[in-house]
Amino acid sequence: MPTLFSPPIPISRGGNLGQTSDPEIRGIIDQNLINARTPGSTVAQATSLTIGSRLVTVAPVDMPQAKWTLIVSSPMSEVDRVVQNIFGNVLYWAGFLALAMTAVLVSTATQFIRARSRMDRIQHEILTREMAQARQIQLNWLPNPVNAGTALDIAAVNQPASHISGDFYNWFELPDGRHVITIGDVTGHGMSAAFLMATTQLLVRVTMPRLLDPGTCMGEVNRQLCTQVFHGQFVTMLIIVLDLENKTIDAATAGHAPPLVSYGKGAFSPLPIKSQLVLAVDETQEYPTQRFKLEDSSSLFLYTDGVIDVQSPSGERLDAQRLREILQGTYTSAQAMLDHVASAIAEFRGKQELGDDLTMVAIQIQTKESGREATSANQTSVNLRIAAG
Image 1 (cartoon, one colour):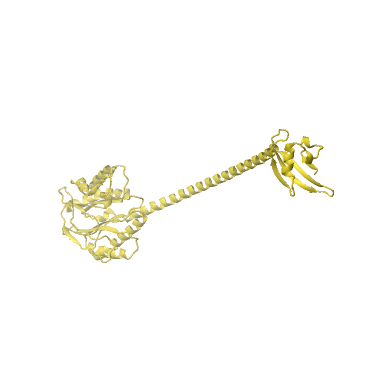
Image 2: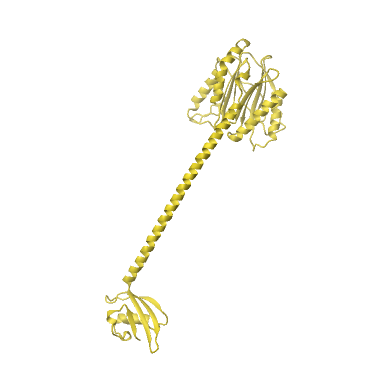
């Protein structure tokens, strides 16, 4: 069987490989040529330094007069070199491709983050502007101090926990000459509380001059709110009507803290009003009006629960008892009373953030002789206090 090694093995030149006596050549022939019917490749392991390990590819060739076998052998060192070159190129291009894809992804992610940051900044600016406008609308809802009347000295502050407050207060004069002061607190804070606050305040402002009674007015407001959908929110509210001529206070409350009253002796105590269910829960709820005696030189302090819920840096609540202790004393004006309480609260809470909206209304009942002069002196400060809140 004539055979050919390519590239040639030096000991195979000019000889018949089928008759070779070299054991290593004989092993290659026995392994690759006997019964070779189809082309194939194998690794021929050899221990001789003359031949060495080789990759042997065998292909039978049928000739007209004889049968040849073509053997192509390559040293494994050359095969390894070729494979390493190919593998090296593959790794290089794979690394290049990975680096390119990484660069594209990083660039895309960077552009996305920048675009998202720009969009968030624009949205924040728009939201801040809208909140500022909404807050200004709220401030415009607050009463003008000139409507308080010559015998009433009133100062008020409304400080929201966030941009928009859910608290409200108002005062106005009824057609019969009596004075209405109301304060309320909507659950939560933010836009939803602000809408409910505005609705409640409008209902009181429209209903009270028609019904003239705080309890009846509160019942009508409650029925109106119960017909609306406010997703489980409710309102606490206090309405008092001051009759300076007959020296009486008519009051009704829906779950709101009673006003603190001082009769000119420096001690403040809660007006003994029987509280009823909060608004916007049960449309059949009734709210009775209770009447109390009013004296000259009396002082009243109305507040929302955000005042007594103020916390110190250590987590201690202000509570109602401490508020009465802070109020202890006599004041030259309603603004002086409000400034004293506001200063004490600020000192108590330090840098602690407000957990709820904070609203306070200070009222002094003046004698007829001093009422007009004192009211004129305090109108400017009330305006400033409302704007600052």
